Amino acid sequence: MSNFNLGMKNRLILYSIICFVFSFLNFLEDYNESSFYEAIQDLIYLFPLSFIFILIIYLIRKRTIESNFYKRIELFNKKTFLFFVSIATIIFFSFLLRLISMVLFNDDEDLIFFDTLFFAILIIVSSVVLFIYLFEIYLENEFEKKELKIRLKENEIENLNDKYMSLKNQLNPHFLFNCFSNITSLIDTEPEKAIKFVEELSNVFRYSLTNSDEILVTLSEELKLLNSYFELQLIRHQGLIKLESSVDVSKLDYLIPPLTLEILIENALKHTVFDKHNLLKISIYTREEQLIIENNFNPKINTVKTESFGIGMKSIKKQYVLLNCGEPSFKIENNIFRVEIPLIKSSYD
Picture 1 (cartoon, one colour):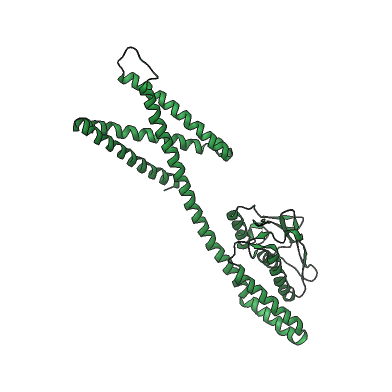
Picture 2 (cartoon, rainbow, N blue to C red):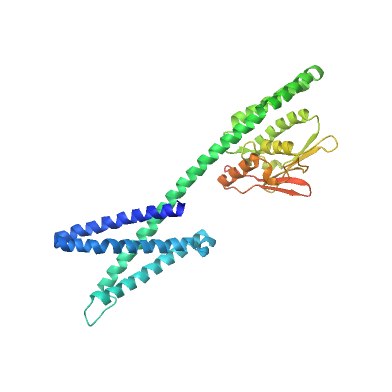
């Protein structure tokens, strides 16, 4: 069953219960003032009529918010538009019900349209419309809260999976074997460099374990991680990669999701063909409130399309969707793979 049918079914049940309670209270009042037969008769008429009336009001509102015009306008204009629709609905049904009452129940020759009965109908219709509109707003807000909780939970699970995959990549036997091989070879020839290598490896693991649970970290922290991670990869790939960084100092306190830069560097290393004749060149710089990461585009087989660059990209995109702080872009121009990451201004600035 679709979400629409499920929502409609729930509302039909809910509104039928409300109408039944209202009709039953009216039945008790009629039973005290008249006979049981007359009270039952009023109940039989009142329940379906009140249910149909409430359903019509609900459907008018529903069709309004589903209209293309309503979806295109801004939030303030949406509220204004919905307000005028509700006023028009009240006026229309007040006049219609008063006209029906005059035709069916009024035998007087001197008919007065705007009498006490008209204003009583106006109050009843206004109350019903106001109740439905406010009640629907409440239900929609509750539904949005539940949807947000579900999305947050899904995002939390995905983030945990991405962090696990990132740590797994760092701790996979191939990566560790290369690191230990590099350390072993450096100990005899360049002991100072071996010590530095171990320090950088320690920095990468420490950052991943301590900051991976954070929602946002400063760009300065991410660049420190990047420098340590790149030093490891530089030794591992024997100088076949090159990193140029020209980040505006004023942007160092801006925020981004943790491990963003490591994911992007991993992506470049994993999906790009490079050798001593064609180095992998990675550039990182800022432009306004964007962090730009570029590398020369020389993809391996089956990675021509941007969408095929792995779950890391999807993870970054989903984090920004949840944060509602802009949207990262991934594009290929002039044999350059370019990633633009929105920098998030700290609330303390």
